[in-house]
Image 1 (cartoon, rainbow, N blue to C red):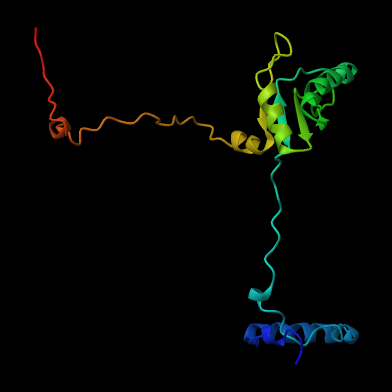
Image 2: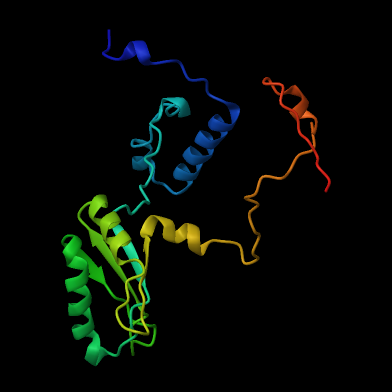
Length: 189
């Protein structure tokens, strides 16, 4: 037998497939491109359930952090600020850093993106640098890049979460079922 023939299943040709094949053949004949017909398969194609599942793009950035609160500086002071920030950030591991400019290209945006070699280094840097003051006006706010999309996609309208457990009066006589037979007393003075 043919290797792998035990996995082959007959595939039913539908009327729509036949119509498409006839349409393609007629179009090719009309254009006098018969040599292309030699390349067209006579088969009906593969059944969809035999195809591999598509690969999913990994869109996580576990090694990257986003630092906000960085001073906005012009191109003349960019290198000096970049070196200062590099010394602070490189304490937690070697990293690639990017400090983007505004659309006009006149000054930085006031943020920095650092990509470390491991997620542990990124987590350690995020914890250490979050809340750190560079000077009186600039305090860093550091967020893991994976959390950045969740934070920026919040609803515009604030909806407070209810964290307190509400008091229930479902059974206000539970004190009567005390196993040690204790009772509650009310004293009036």
